[in-house]
Amino acid sequence: MSDVAVVEAAAPVRGARRSGALLARNVVLLTGSQISTWCVSLVWSLVVPRVLGPAQIGIYTLGVAAGGVLTVLIGLGMQPLLVREVAADPERAPELIGTSIALRGLISLPVLGAVILVALFGHLGPEEGMAIALGWGMCIFYLLAEPIQSAFQAAEKMKYLAYNGVITKTLVTAGAVALVLLGVRALGLLLTSITVMAAVMGLNFLWVRGLTRIDWRVTVARMRWLFIASLPYWGFAAFFTIYLWVDDLMVGLMTSSTVLGWYALPTKLFGTLMFIPTILSTAWLPQMVKGAEEGGDGIWRTARNSIELVLILSMPVCAGTILVAPALIHLLYGSAFAESVPVMMILAGCLPLMYFGTMVNQVLIARRRQMDWTKVMALASVFNPICNLILIPYFQHRTGNGAIGAAISLVLTELVIAGIGIGLTRRAFSGATLVRLGKALVATACMTLVVELVMPRAGLAVGIASGLVVFPALALLLRVLSEDERDQLRDAVSKTIRRLRPTRTRAA
Image 1 (cartoon, rainbow, N blue to C red):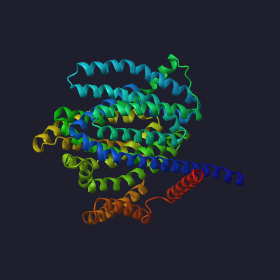
Image 2: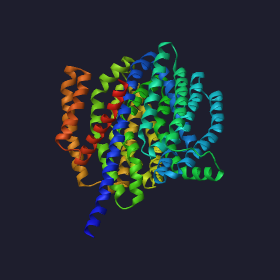
Image 3: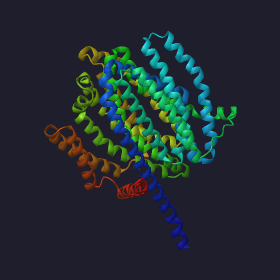
Image 4: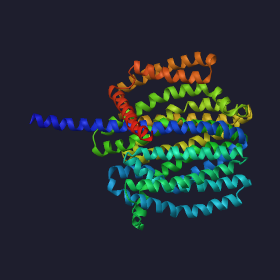
């Protein structure tokens, strides 16, 4: 009997180790793809804003913002629902993919009619109206491919998500750089994005054949179930989108296209810095779902690890952003965007709060408690515009830069959201959590000191490099990561390198 007990006890341990190793490999893979897209984005940042200028960047941002709003309206926010349902029952993947694509296609048609009416008869200039119309084109191809990407995520086939990101970003950037150098303006860049997203959608339909089929036998009953099941997620997505884009829209309406350009560029950089919680939440959600389905405290152990890790990583990113913002924005965008510097430094204060909020959302999705976070975002969608109504005109009048008011509004809102998030996930915290975060804070403080000393003397690149060396070294010295996390990371990196070696040999 004792031997049987030992075998039964060892099986979950081996399963946990395999899950941890798979999680680490997926994180390494997604991180590699993110680094690739960063390099491509750097080219975009060095060329496109300088050529177009703040006003055209404002028009481009308007089209992207319209695409974001329409993505929520048509997509029903169902992506996390699809991931959750397919992770819990992979046999449902064919019908869920087919039904979601058909439902989104059906909804997109009346939305297109409404967009055309707004573009033609709204109080907009010709370029602004066309930018909003092109936003519909950007979102529709993305939305038709997203159900397939959800199936890849649920099956923990993260390489296909990595392919999507790298191909899309590379082609969009290459097209944008070439076109702006030929004199094409913001609308041409939006058209380029539409073309690339259509091509990537086609690739997703090819890739999914290796995972599952798509069941096109769509019924009214299936669409009705999916629509109703999506409502809590749709509510969250709708409120989150309002919250995400309301700053841009209010800055544009209450100031000018130039001030919107000052705000748009820091928010683009800020969005890039959200790669850490995006990667970790993408990789962790399937395992959170499995932990929640098993019952007990499994979900809270997984949640604790994920929350602690994103908070640890947010500290050096926040401090580093504040330190390098003046030199970085001047290098990337020139003196025309000098007013973006204080905006970027203020927005950096949101990073730990938003990293935390991203993981709280994943925990609640795994526990089928999405409506709790929907209510939080509903509150944020009211609180944030109220702050904007007060602070944007105040700073526009006092400093000529209403974007500062929008940035402060975002920080205040995120503080409220984080406070509620702590209450919703309090079972994920322990005394050990505070110890780990304290060690990470010490490592961040030391990194900040080193960068402050190095950067004025050696330049921006050396300053950034010193931070990238000092924080990991101190984190290892202080044992910020657990022994299991260090082992999983080493294993994931070594396996990734081993898989790449045969490819190089064959190529040679």
